[in-house]
Image 1 (cartoon, one colour):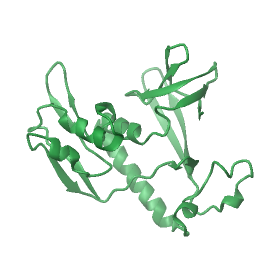
Image 2: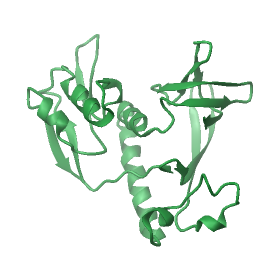
Image 3: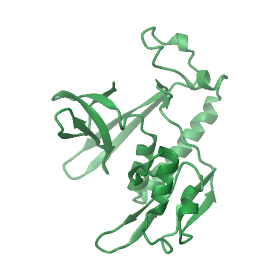
Length: 224
């Protein structure tokens, strides 16, 4: 699979790539949801280009006036948690932390691979599916697991190298929650509003019906 990268030494921070990318994929000039972007440090003016992990549509490359964007071929494919509006997988993260340190995180990943729809409870069949149902044939689970682990490693290496913004941008571009009305339930309260953003720490930003912005770190989110 081919993806694109920004060569920092040639990039001037004009953001033309972000406008071209968002216009092509989202139908509007919204740099905040571009697959590829360049971060400019306001203090040092240092420019750091981030990698597009999804596709090399070349719109950003054509828009760059300085030849700062190049393509590179790697073996990579992104798996989502939803097929259309039907849930196909889920995550569970447990963490032990102190005020200034994370001791460990345990991540559980569940994906419906070869489950027939009839195996699900009757009241869930409308909202849940499996990969085999969507592709029309049984999937080799060992090969599928190997691909999941490889993709996990790719993202883990990005985290280790401090490429948090790349992860966040990819998350936003694939999110089925943003720009939709949601109901949030936490241990303390519940409320409704519009999911408008995901911040740099992974928290969901919701604009409540009274106009106030609420930062949701943990809880249940139901799309309405």
